Image (cartoon, rainbow, N blue to C red; front, side, top):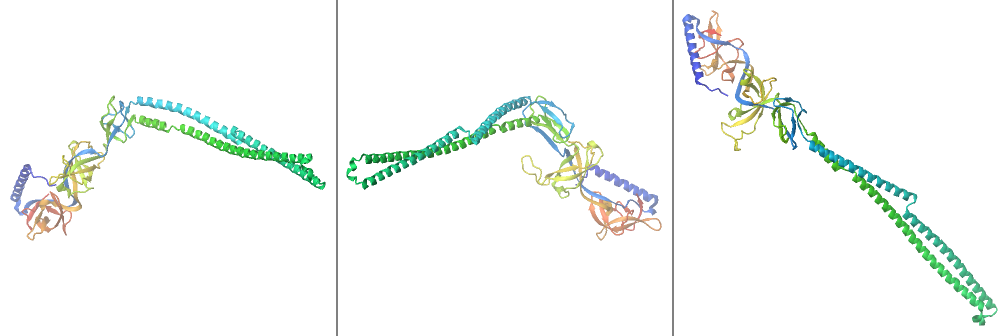
Length: 479
């Protein structure tokens, strides 16, 4: 960035020029044979820099706002603006006694409900074990009755089968007796007296009676078998009912187990306890307290504190569009502040906004006055800079190290258009002559120019001002 030429600067240059003229005139009067008096500087290698000069404001590189979402009054505030705090320090405490009461009531309700649920579960498990034991040992009343029914039906079938067998035997005997008697009658030719034979009538009645008894026995056997089938079906049904009853008991136990699960209440209590832990408003970072919004007795919700890292500073500035081409991220920056006197601190250009500064109504600035927000990280350790200070910045846009540097006025153009510098060279007679040395110029600043050429060496006496100097001119060098 070029410096503006002020009226004071012009007057100072005029006075200095007049002094040089008087000096040179005086020098010529004192001994013209020694040549014109010229000021020279010994040529040396040094660093050359071009800078872009700006102003900015010091900020903390890390600003942390401490908020609370709890609508409880502030009981105590433990810090003031300027206090240094460490991560985890208690900044304030909220009065959450009402929530503590709620937690205790919920815990009491949970304990009572848990005890009742555990008692119900124990009773359900006891009923299940008792029923399962009765089933396994055969002492279940329903199964016992069904089993007795099957046993009785089986006995009835066996008795009916015996009765059928006995009746069948009686029928066989009665029929056999009837057949024998008829053969006997046939041998004695009793057929004509058949209707009047009482024995034959009696035998026929015996057959009919035994056959009727057999039919009754067979009918009873059929009924007994049907009763047995029915008893077996009843027994099977009782087994199914018993199995279903076992499942029902198990379902009761499962339901009782579920009723002992009070996760919702546990979660609710845990949430309240988590909220209670927030009663202590703690610092989430280490740094310096720069704002205390919390007030004792006021509602502790919203922004309560601001903590900034006072040891890690940045400077925010605006780079003009015209200077943007000269700087880049990573450039070194020299920092000065009125409050720190002549001290010079160092920094690094870390950020340049991708767009121009937003104007108040939302559109971007444009044109030669457009600016791009930028940030500079302060790299000096103990800088003495404070948050909010105004700072003067010099961004090193270009730098050349270990090069020959001469004043800008020492470079002129010869008759061939070459750029030259004049060196005071001592002759054999001890006098000095101005020797023109063509040079290649490099980086330039407002005051200095980088030069290089064959024959340049450290210590050569370079004439500071080439104005009025000619090659071979007799000069008297003054440092």
